[in-house]
Length: 154
Image (cartoon, rainbow, N blue to C red; front, side, top):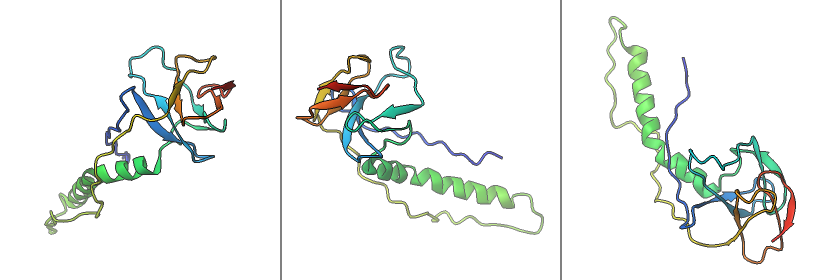
């Protein structure tokens, strides 16, 4: 039995196509370019480097707290339905036992307001991977390549 549930959630991009990220090491925010799935220029990696401090972390380590809260909130109704369906399946076919689902059941996850992504920060292209631009806070003097971690002057 596969207990994994996949719930698609869309996060907003700014008008230049960048998504906000937060470094799990320095906890500062920056943005990276969100490539289309079919984009052959997108680098495929198993870790990224923080453009602000240079620390590396796995590809799923860069969510902001607001993004995590939003993803948990919008997935709440699907989780509620999964629990209801699981209870129904668990007792289905047991002779002499009848389960009446409580359709008002909820895990209590509140649906959050939609996220917005402001057009802030400065676009920079690392010389080593110009196809992977980033946005850093205005006035950032030095950056690190998202893909290889090489330092460069912003």
